[in-house]
Amino acid sequence: MVYTITLNPALDYSIQMTEFNLGKLNLSEKAYFLGGGKGINVSKVLKNLGVESIALGFLGGFTGEFIRKELNEKSIKEEFVEVEGNTRVNLKIKNGDVETEVAGISPKITEDHLKKLLNNLSKLEDGDILVLSGSVPKGVSSNVYAEIMNSLKKDVKVIIDTRGEAFEEALSSKPYLVKPNHHELEEFCKKELPNLKDIIEGARIIQSKGAQNVIVSLGKDGSLLITKEGDVFKGNIPKGVLKNSVGAGDSMVAGIVSKLASGDDLVDAYKIGISSGSATAYSYDLCTKEEVMSLLNQIEISKV
Image 1 (cartoon, rainbow, N blue to C red):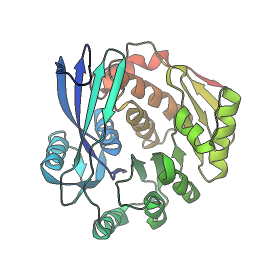
Image 2 (image 1 turned 90 degrees about the vertical axis):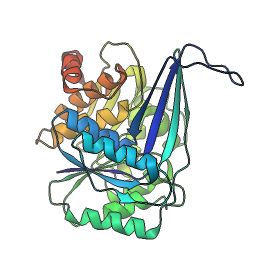
Image 3 (image 1 turned 45 degrees about the vertical axis):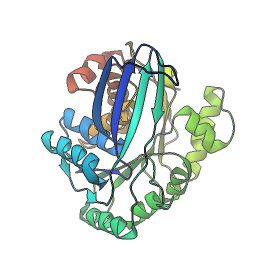
């Protein structure tokens, strides 16, 4: 079984407009709500790809209820811990090629809430996959992902998609896969990584800290996969028109997990991951299976 954890979910309010001017009345052309948070997005895309998962984390208030209802309508299993206060609202404004995001305020997460979450993880079995995605709520220790991983009693593949201290502290618990982008890798290494050689060296530093496999997203230049065996693969980006980058990285994770869950190796899973991430970027919503498969023949994986 696949489990996703979203410690800091959000109700995303996305607005599209031709022009955005600070201090003036701006008219939107399109607007829509999406129950979000990185782990939740992974569960949604997995469902679209025909893979079941159980979504875990924290939800609260009327915004949390919106997300819970949306998941139930999509027949996605969830076991969220109920918290006081409202799940945050994130505002995303897209005008032309420019995207602006405003992150809302998260509800308070207590030690009791964390204990309930860890108790939900006690059911995990050998061979299960656990996806830990997104930021850590204010007031929660930055070592929470490491704590979650260390609490697991079984042989579980853990995939981490976060940044900052939470990312750094989780590495010593030896996650199966981590997925920083180019900028996040530079943040981790505390220096610029201007070329492919430097990026690969940066990824190997992450591996030296404990991560088994590393995928580095490079934007329009594609991505890199550095495996625990030491091999390096580069994947391209298929042709398409960028419509919405929200959830593209989460969709890539979901595509990879969908294949790992069926026993495929990581390199094959990487190809589906690229197609899934691109399909979401070329859509106004999270990708469907049909959209993913339509791009698959454009994906080329080459050994570096």
